[in-house]
Image (cartoon, rainbow, N blue to C red; front, side, top):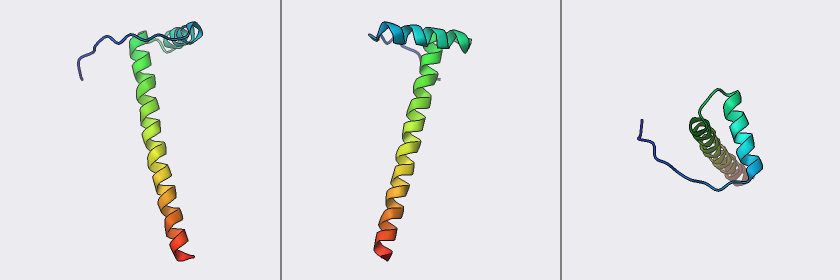
Length: 66
């Protein structure tokens, strides 16, 4: 695992409260919880991009057939 470094953000107060409550509910430290959330976000973004590329490729194939 890579070494952790401090990273400061400026966020809306309501978002900070929501993240704190979410971390408590998940029984995680806030930094670990936010890191997990970000990893899920980027993984999902990568999956969506890959799926969109598949859909576009399928459409190109269909267009060639027609």
